[in-house]
Amino acid sequence: MARIVVIGAGMGAMTAAARLAVAGHRVVVHERSHTYGGAVGRVERDGFGFDTGPALLHLPAVYRDLFVKTGKQPLEDLVELSQVEPAVRHVFADGTTTDLPNASRAGVSDALDAALGSGAGALWSAFMNRAREAWDRTRRPLLEEPLWPNWQVLADREPYPSVARRRLLRKERRAATLAEIGAFELDGEPRLCALLEHFALAHGLDPRTAPASAAVLPYLEQTFGSWSVRGGLRALADAVYERCLARRVEFAFGSAVSRIVVKDGRTAGVELADGTVVDADFVVAGVPPRALESMLSDATGPGTGTPAPVRAPGGVPAQSGLPSRLTVLLALRGARPDGTPHRTVLHTPDRADELDRVFGPRPGLPAAPTLAVLRPDDAASRPDADHEAVTLTATVPAGATVTDADVRGLVERAESAVPDLRDRLLWHEVRTPADVEEATGAVGGAVPAPALAAAGGRLLHPANSTAVAGLFAAGGWAHPGGGLPHAGMSGTLVAGLIVEGPEFRGSQ
Image (cartoon, rainbow, N blue to C red):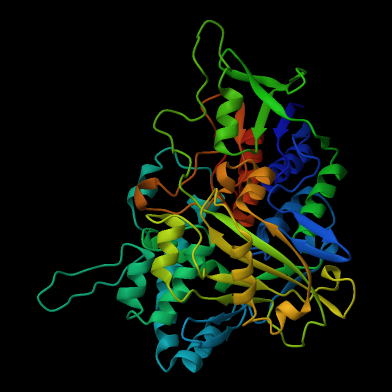
């Protein structure tokens, strides 16, 4: 039985902890805050409840597998999962509206034909067929296996089978970015392009530079569906935490780790902020890159006099330049009308301005950003049937300063999806990039994106193994990256590497 210290109680870290405890190890989690879940937070006030991080679950199979492998009670016995129907309502800049069904390729095609005109569904379906090829080619190496030692193969090889386009007097062109897929393969239809590009923006990626392999993002959502959890996704974090406790994982909250102790090139434990040293055979760090670098900044082997590296030479660097999220929580009087979509996406009228401001060269909040309006049909989110909880979310630059005028602008925009919103408003709370930074430790409140192939490897994440023996990385800032499914898989991979050793090749 090994002694294992886990730094942080995010979803990836707790997944690793539960699996390692089942394997017979003694696991202690040290969390600097006074709760668990990381980005999966919750605000409760006056009978209202709001998720402050992710609000929908995609690819629930990752967490189903966790509960199957760590106990007798399956996930569905512990949390109430429901497929959201429709999956989403899109309101495009020209006012066109379409409701897309959940996990139905044919249904999405029909809905697009009805809203955008005959042929739109066929264009989208053909694109999704190509996206499926990209998913099939990258699913295992980017989600289910430890990062390949020859990860440069993933960096250099574009898995999306772009369609060649030959134009009069011009050379043949193939889409290299998500935006070019829209221009070349969706015939530049502005609403189809907006639909496609919003998947990149929602994950913190610029569609103008995101590789064509980002086609897997809409494929994943529209194939495996969007799921809500009664009580919000915080209920999923509660269930993972309770499973950890059932497997005798120990938690120390308000227990910040200041240093990872390294002896003879191998982790030997951690030093806490109060100076206490906790011995360990393995350390799992579920923290952002800057925090991990800081914990290792003075971790030196005897006589070496040099900082212990986090990554092996030639390893994948951490993602950088990623944006954050602005979230506004609205407590409303009045019942949620029957038939209201769980999620509505209000597309920006000026996408070029939005992308320039979120990703540069004109940093700042867009005047009218793409806005997700979440109106869950969940009795646990409101004090009674005569009230409603609504959440507004926009992608904004990391570290952005948010003014009262910015918040008022979002609320005014949301009124097109929530009639009489301002008249119904009881109170609101705002979660800015600074709040995200406080909750997660990520610089500027940046949110990690899922790992993607191609693009020279800039959208890969550092491997779960590190150059320091016995030190592993889990969570959204390690392979395979951000998002609930990916964070869960990072914990699975770390547990496999510790239990089975470097020969571990992932789930079968």
